[in-house]
Length: 191
Image 1: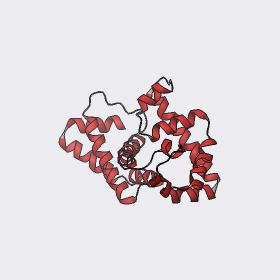
Image 2: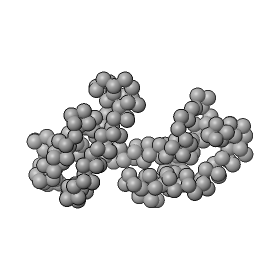
Image 3: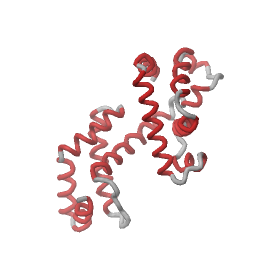
């Protein structure tokens, strides 16, 4: 199916416009993309914008001769929308204290007013429930280190393996937090 749409986009402007309309009006695709982003913490209005941006990104990608979609088109567009959203989050995240700064004992006085000692201990407690590899991956990721660099630092075979490990570690972290509602409440008030 994705190959047919790619070919249609490449063939003519009217074909491209038809693909854009069909993707944009596809209720299951819209629901999947927006639902995924909202679950990750994106507000609904932004999620709708990112849905549109992901479709535009897909259309642009169709003109690349080496475009290959290995998963379903829905997963491809969800992944694209997530990446668009995460780029925005990363930009705003640079202004916030990073995980490694939160874990240091010599935190700046301004940060001490933002996060009291109890919350720092809670964060350490949660992170300490992860294995060392997960801690390293998440800390490197939290300081905006590129996946390629993380793969090299931790001697993974590829950037994709580092990305997969980060995803697995985040899922473990979420599971730990979800299993302890009081920790979840304290950490959410911290952010």
